Image (cartoon, rainbow, N blue to C red; front, side, top):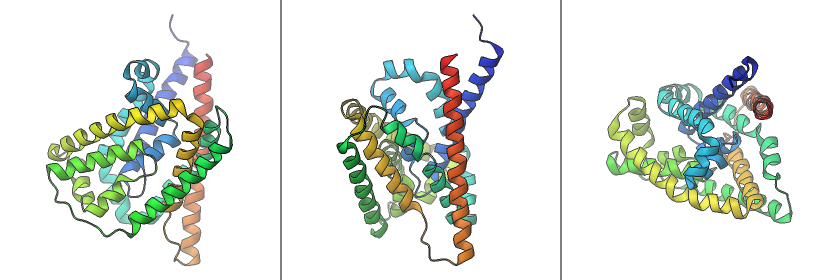
Length: 286
């Protein structure tokens, strides 16, 4: 039986949403300070990804269409928009970062509701606080760390892939920021935008290896301790959002502009999340 025209249109819009979410994750992950894992959590894609990588047979059966569009979007955002990211960062890194911080913050109500979907107790709140404090400490450590240069090459780009994979599995850690410490960020960005396979192939191998190894651990943790892990991840995401905000040593006008970008980012993401949830629910029930 063919789908009705109305349902077909809603499904098409849903596919576009998944694609757009992937583009946003791929694009955002390029920016220093932004974690790809954090954005996956914000869009509700983190657990489906972990489940699919940990148990491909059952995961693909449930999520193949959604993850297909989402991963296509990530590829488009990561590779196709890397040049745009470089231009925006050159124009005004601070305002771009403020907009992304606001966008992540706008998803907090939905993340809070999802984290408590299987119950919430004192251990959940404790894990949220521990996740927040621990991530603040880790990010402060990296911010004060002296940079170490790693020569661009096969091993250097393999390290890039490992760090990218790590940041997708562990929300809150920004591979871009780590790569700045190692002096690999700029050559990696140029290689991606230029479709240089000497850069893309080692990165792909490193990312795949890291994701495959760590996803099973996270998948088991979610299955055993859903509420605790979900709240810990929420704490990590909150800490990351706070830490990526730029220093406020600016005049009043600059400060107001930064606040405006944060508020606009939060408002857009909150409305976008609400609309997405409503549309997904309608498609499910029809």
